[in-house]
Length: 411
Image: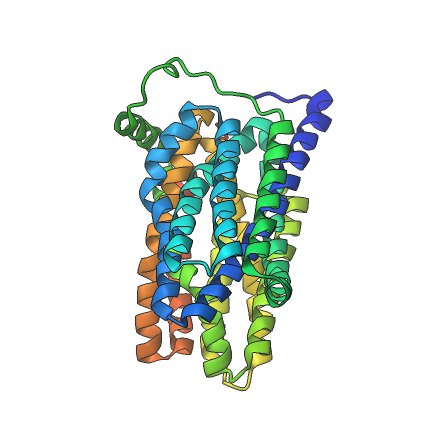
């Protein structure tokens, strides 16, 4: 799409409106997620139940993602997001209504988490796929920084807000907060002008398998994109478990308490917010692949140094957690803009859904590896090993000419 100076205010207004709704919705969803985890912990005290809740929360997205991407590319993404938010609100309302009359059944919580995951599988890639429809290409990196900032603020504030609410209100009242968040998000999406992609076959019955293959074919045609998406999945195996191990290393190795563990999480999120703001300010001037490789290298060095710390050096770990947090937007935010600029808009939903699915599949693999090796060799040694593997991944990125060259020419 072509933008001129007269349209600058228009696209900025559209982006601000839609992301104001997303900011509220992401925050309320984060609060609800934390509250439900505490509820399941209080009522069951079972690690198996918490693991099952995590599984039903991401497995539908991992399995259905590539096929959902076909529908995202075929139909109006604006209405897909609206319907997805309505589904989330409806199932959350059902859970809240039941909770007003009785203790929430564990099976019903699992069902609601599953359908929320399915709706998210439609909503998240749709949101990312509409961004290049309303934002000029040269501003995508900066906008990615601001959107990452929204998520970082939610990570910073949601645990504290959830703790306050959970101590004061019944879980059903807290669930209503998410319904209000979804309603506001729906309103802002409805008020945003989002161009609709034109498809010659939009009246035909979708051929999910054929159209998913079309998305793969487009991905292969773009230089370096297949390698990039596969390397992202491999990095996810190492990256995803690290956050779940922060409380363990904070308390079991560094001898901290729950308070010190919370400080680590807050500092990491604050670093992510700082990185997001920096990306939003200067992101349009960076070289994308070099930035991604640099972010991976800094993360790897941080993990290696963490593994080398002595037990009495908790505060050094806190500082390293903040530095590692800064790298997150410079990896994930910039990676997203590569997809948005290199993949044709009519295929973007399929590619983003595929990338998300591969990352979701990588998550349990990484958790199993991390849990097994951390128990066997010590959590601090696993951080060191993870850092070495991360640096190897950075080297692999650098040694792939196709990946290094995939952003030399903007499509």
